[in-house]
Image (tube, rainbow, N blue to C red):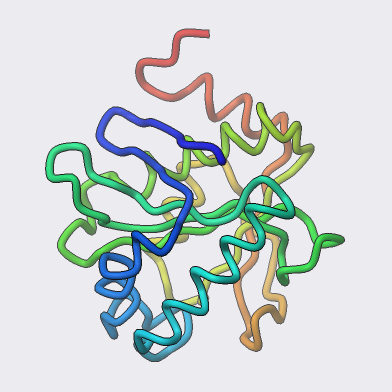
Amino acid sequence: MVVLHTPRLRLEPLTDAHLEGLHRLNSDPEVMRYITGKPDTLADTQLMIDRVKARWAEWGYSWWGFIELATGELIGAGCIQHLGRVKSGPLEIGWRLRRDRWHQGFASEAAERMADFAFEDLQAESLCAVRDPANAASGKVMERLGMGYTGIEHWYDLDMARHDMSRADWLLARERRPGHRH
């Protein structure tokens, strides 16, 4: 399983060891407002971890827990998975962050690293993301990442705003990142 690093985060594949921190994240109604519309129970969070562990075993990628280096705490989670959770779907990037870490650049930092993994390690030709149309904050992260809005589509039983990025879009966005050294 793949551990990723950023200046402030360690992205670890989710396991049972992350249950408490992930449940703290997933049980916050504000965090889940645009994801499922309701907080997860402990059993919901365990089911997520069980699905994620199976995907890591099958695909070699799935959901990571975002561990803040300064505190050692799980402050978020994010994924590279297949849209609709089916292998034939395009690669999707997604994230969620603890409310006390919103507006500090953590989502963008983690998203950039996960996108790099998708394009460099998995050799993806494109990457998509979906969000509740009202979730403007995630939309801004998608824009900063280099993704463009492509319309409203029905995913995960909801009408979602879809954003897409080609390999060329990613390369261009990566070149514009502060501190890029390629």
